Length: 151
Image 1 (cartoon, rainbow, N blue to C red):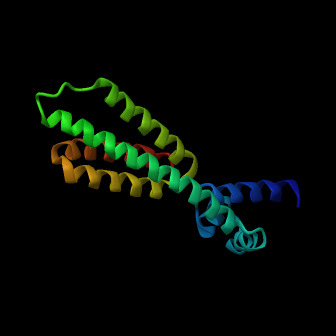
Image 2: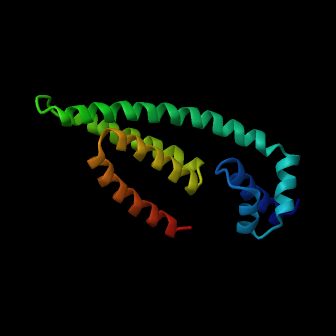
């Protein structure tokens, strides 16, 4: 494999196994044939690698999201009950956890997957606090629009 082809292969491997992009999308991005990408996927078992990456990362993300949901619920309880002092450490923990989740998603998910995760999170928040949901929804929309401009 020549240097140029090796570079294309490495990029395609990354896009497929790390970002979960389709062969068609990768072919468009790299300006090479979809058949070439598909043959690499089959020949080098990229699907197994993709599945292994996602199963480990998906489980970790699920655990982090579950923890974040618990912390958000605690924070909302504090907000609803004026007798409880708001725990600033809890707010810090939620922010820290969000950054950790962002670190996983930046390196492993395509923008469309990231949007799906955010929509799911917003729907969960909507069930418990409609006002907070409204505030977050507008912030998320602006965030997504800014991210989309980069693509």
